[in-house]
Length: 120
Image (cartoon, rainbow, N blue to C red; front, side, top):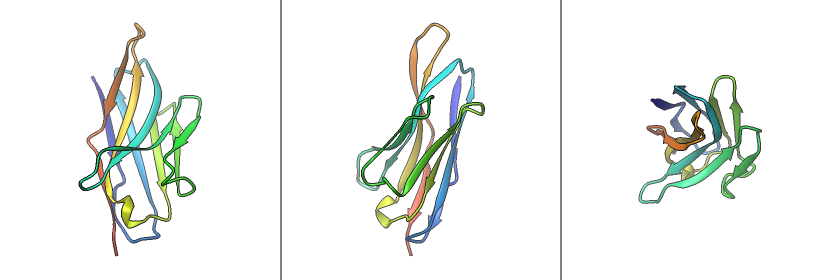
């Protein structure tokens, strides 16, 4: 079985920074795209940023220029460096990974989420 475990959330003041980490573990043949999503209070889950195994990135307009996603393929980990945080960034942040098994079958996995609260 595959597990995604996030870490690094917490309480930060507006304008501050946080770095989230996500580690994938278990029986892993290949990981394609990984990413971060978030769900704010009373809102639907939304894409924050994704990164392919080749390092191509995609960001939501709301975080461009402030957030940076990176990946360590050797460790099956991704990171989200969040700078200039705003109160509207407050949400539960979820890690996502698209895995492909030995037979070429793709599966989608989610972490349990980590809370990020931006408040003074």
